[in-house]
Amino acid sequence: MKKYTPTQIRFLAIRTLGNFLVLGSILGMFLTFGPAVKTEIEYRYNKWKGVTYVVADDLPQDQNISPTFTPTEASGPTPKQNVFFSDILARQPTVQVLSPVDTEFGIVIPKIAANTKVISDVDASNYDEYIEALREGVAHALGTYFPGEQGNIYLFAHSTDNFWNVGRYNAVFYLLKELEAGDEVDLYYQGIRHRYTVTQREIVDPDDTHFLTDAKDTETLTLQTCWPPGTTLKRLIVVAKPVSDLQDN
Image (cartoon, rainbow, N blue to C red; front, top):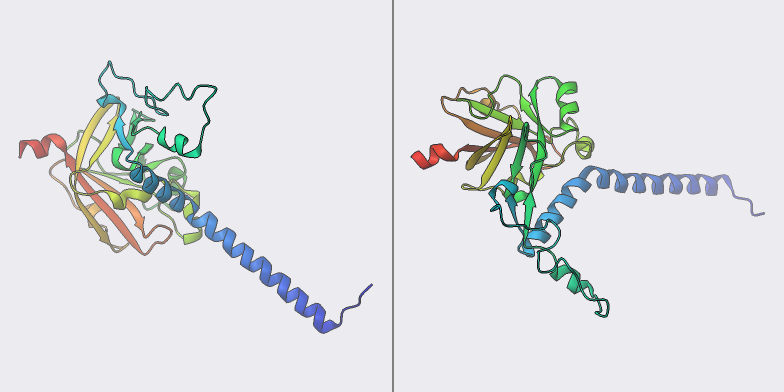
């Protein structure tokens, strides 16, 4: 059996420790940024494929669009046909239906396929409380208004104290950066659908709370997430107004 000198043993120990640290760093990066990367890739791929999303409420009653295949493609190939990967890609639907996961209090954003429940009256200053809420969905800030009321409805998600914790929380707001003026945001509250249109998007410092604290004399929907994803450097704010208010103007 080969004997190692003390110098060789130290070298092997240091090299082994170094390998573990490298692997640990790679795993940490994957756990941290994995949800964001996955969400981004899916969004880009579906955009390249021309996939669009519609809310189930918008479908005509006599129209049935499968969430998996379009009606003409749902039957698949005959037994004698050869199936290639390109065939599978081509069979993907160009329209996918979003059915709200929670009509008592939920949010649906068709452009980015966001669809999750909203946890109401979450104290944005209470770390334990809002972290628990963000594991389930989007948080509605305590003291702000509800859909249909004249005031600021403040929703936030993907909030974290440290970058390595980002993967633990709901990733539904990772793609808020894709929203532009004119895009649709839907809130469901007590079984009623409330439609909003994006009017503003802004990146602010984390200590800039005026979007949360400023009083609003009209119904306003404010969405917040951390920016960039996986950091606490900035906050991305998206503001939307009821469709009816914009149409009246």
